[in-house]
Length: 208
Image (cartoon, rainbow, N blue to C red; front, side):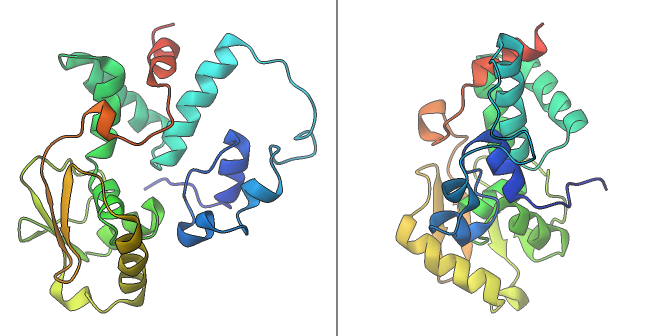
């Protein structure tokens, strides 16, 4: 299974904003994005003229890296979103938000999406009482997502829940942190997705 294995903070610096790939570090002043606000590499501090294509590409890359999805799979998500009724950009974000690894992260069981991906891959997560170890599994409204009973004392999960309890969860989710279970109340609307994303740029990029 192909995935990015290099320093993830470089991705945040390349996009010029926090993608929250390192958990609690992203909420502190140790975050590299706050220390170095320019892209990585020897030409990072040089001036580059922004083009329409460049803006479209950067927005697509930002969302793709945020959710930890490679290009081929991201393109498939776009095609699925384009076939569904409604606004394509909103459909795309809904598909990404309903990935199991993202749901685990949103519920506070993991400090970041990459960490949530690992929990799912290692079999620590249950959906409606059944083991699901596929990070891209699409969770639907009404599904119950829970940490496996034998995994509830994992330090990573416990510390993540403590941090998440102070920040809360999106309104389209319901979580019982004591039992380490959560329920997807509904597929989120665009207004419920707290994402600084201009999804129409992604649609324009693939519509070229």
